Length: 234
Image (cartoon, rainbow, N blue to C red; front, side):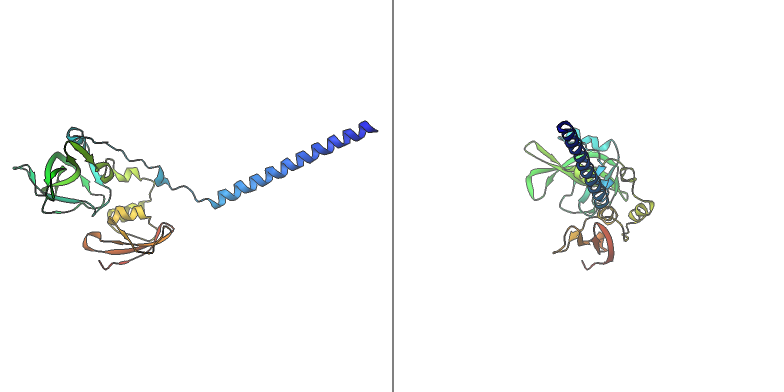
């Protein structure tokens, strides 16, 4: 009888252990399914890794002439008239701002003295635009120390290919420099350039003002998507 009782207790304990394990497994599966439902899908934009050149001196900067480049953020960077005969840029007189996703065929690299700081030289990318030769600063040099921001300023691959997962409608709006409801903030930057956030805005519900080359727009976002586009006042 004692042996039978021991066997019964062992079987009961095993059954209880199996039951507990099954309950824990079911709870884990329920939690995993719930997490899947609650977690939003990862944004494919996060997986885009644009090429970088890691420039460090004038010789390395000549890599900019080896392929086209596209402006990452329009209306954020100035360019200046460049006299090809004198090999000199007029850095005291802005010719304009680089446009959103403007394609640049950089012909040469030059330097020019900063008008506000004679000890600093600007590293210049020379390009043609509307039949005129211009120079856009892509870095600086001081006492032999070079600092480049070209990798932050330019794409070296066609953005249409880098972001080919975007819809045809989104790219059509971007190429026409338009903003439509449902577009992302990055798509808006590609379409109309740099924006300035309204005070009081937060990451999920915000409004930005875009100068848009003299045609200002005010764009409101909710959860990262455009919900309203109205003329700006800037």
